[in-house]
Length: 224
Figure 1 (cartoon, rainbow, N blue to C red):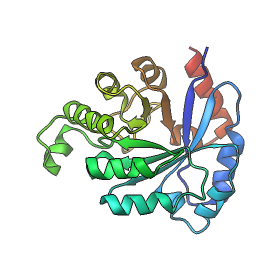
Figure 2 (cartoon, helix red, strand yellow):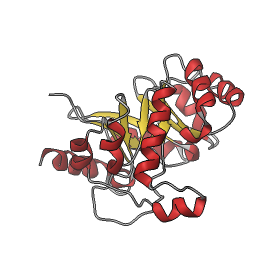
Figure 3 (cartoon, rainbow, N blue to C red):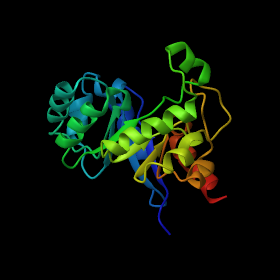
Figure 4 (cartoon, rainbow, N blue to C red):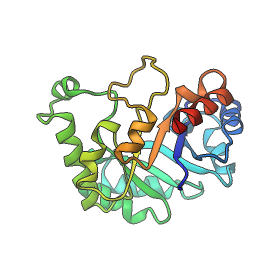
């Protein structure tokens, strides 16, 4: 049986905290990668630390969104890092997505659909006419045209995405405990895997408080 795959969101600007998260989340029962976002990458020693990491699955969540030439240049500047996955907003457009994918080499390009902090009301305020599920499916079709390697979507859109996109699905907005945060379209770990997700992204549910205890709690939740 294949191991469940989890990206731990290293949401900090401190290298010492990042080291602790990595150290305290070691387990052989599930496959773990580490997601580093804007907060860490833009911190004083963030990039230097990432360049020193070895034998870790690194998911660099920069959510790139720009014109084709800028995206090509951006990914070239990351070549000294051992990145497994890199995110780009699908709203960048087909030409930009293709340009980024062409330069990606061994880096898997993951297309970001609609952020889990948004709902139908938010989309209407921004100016979209489509509902969340319709928009995410439309974005997944664009990712397929660009031949991207993965899609980032909430658990609620997984089945819709899988109907048009047959590569990896990475799911944020995962909640282990019933706590409130800034994400609106959330789902429990087992439900997201059951819907067809390949990777789950989990942050505060693991990295806040006793990390080792939280990892054990996650393992128990997945085994139930």
